[in-house]
Length: 91
Image (cartoon, rainbow, N blue to C red; front, side, top):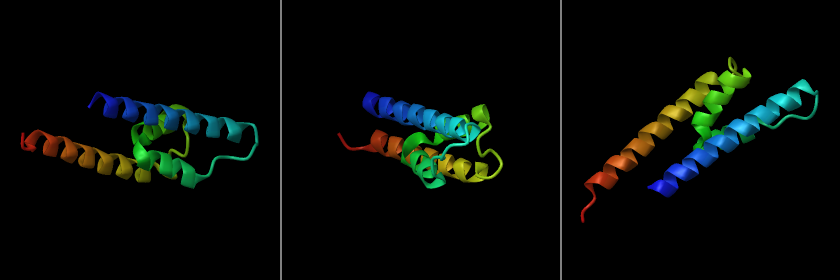
């Protein structure tokens, strides 16, 4: 379980930093990171980092905020379900 928490934290930190780097690229008029990549990072476990980055960097906050919140809720439900199943597993 500790490894899962560490992995979750790492994914969210990386996602947060990638969003910040994308915002930096936008301010310096350079080629941006694709929205597809940002969505993939959120879907593979970085949804919390994506939501915090949107607020912190004011990054795509209006355009895609609902999508990232949906991803976050779905992930929460899935992780909560996995945790509940692990508590009910047979010895």
